[in-house]
Length: 194
Image 1 (cartoon, rainbow, N blue to C red):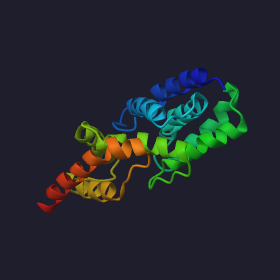
Image 2 (cartoon, helix red, strand yellow; image 1 turned 135 degrees about the vertical axis):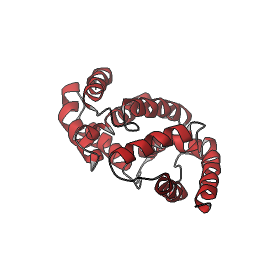
Image 3 (cartoon, rainbow, N blue to C red; image 1 turned 90 degrees about the vertical axis):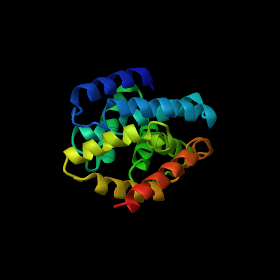
């Protein structure tokens, strides 16, 4: 597998073709998830080979947004199946990558350690110091696309979403879950005031 060439291809494609209206699901999100994936691979002791598969999945996990938000994970898998053979990925590797991509679909449904890592990396911000600034970009994106209109709607959605969310890896259960619970309490207070 030629990870670096595949990365160069998909980063260029995302940079050129993702809508600038994707204030959350833009290339910056992919790079953020990639960085967190590196950290989780180290702390969870993932082999270099499996890390490369995982990072490939990260690079393609939101590429379906080039076409549409609905079913973007499946669209990302379609693109991976089309493109990755050109970079010497085997059919088995591509199917593992697609499993990782599909695991990020909400509600997340990881079936193995690598899928757990991509899920935790994708929603890592829920327990980070930059939670409010990142969630504001998702609110703006959803508002732009007409999915919701008011901050009250957004806070109610966040309350429900974060209330159901749990990290899968021991690393994020330790380093992110406590702050995520704090944010949940803060949002509960905001919603209670409506």
